[in-house]
Image (tube, rainbow, N blue to C red; front, side, top):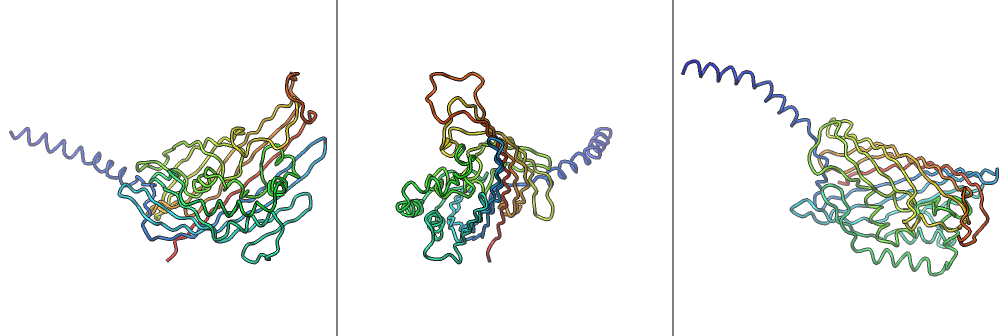
Length: 341
């Protein structure tokens, strides 16, 4: 009996470091899931800076733009399983673009009543809202209460007829004409609930269902926000966590998504081959208490090419003549989110 007690004591002493290590490991796990509370309100700002370089027939053009949106996110209800219903309201929209030295600026906060047609679409967003259901993992489960917003956009479009194709899509640039790559956040895409879903997803981001340790990675295939003709396979990594803030790094590969509405060319060329690809990198800051993304900066670098097909298809419908066209697009998206008192 004495020997058994001694052996038990030795095993207990030897196991103490293992118990301590397990406790340390548990303490180092971070729960990144959303834990929103009913009645909470957040102020969000999303800014997109875009530069497009285009080369066609030895001619180069450069277009730049900045689009900013201010939104209020109200948490309406949260189910027992953590699924949250939130309302997103457009408070303000501003845009500035410089296309071939033609500068256009708009800010809904101090806009004139008599503004040109395409900017009326931005104006129509202000004061409109829609709702989404969010899972604790940040998945946008459903878009709700979007009819009024979409009707406001339809009414804004009704006076412009076909002008919106040229003026809101920036088709003075070949990149826009070929790939639907708007120089501005295209409100037209918000007429589609898929566009609203992508907008909400870009503000929330997807995270693991269970607590994870530093260095843990997870993958996600997702569209770029709202107006893009690209899709992205991203890898997320919990880089660190300190003082209640988790830092998540993003790396991804981009490719052209011809099945998306934004990816369908406005102008077609006969017997040409089109390719687009790129990379994504970024950093997210998450509040560990609520799981809300408080800050983000994401950079997308895209290169595209249109060139004559090596083996022309005689049966292909004749469009515009084959050309060689190159483009480079840099997009920097920043997000800030603050909880309101």
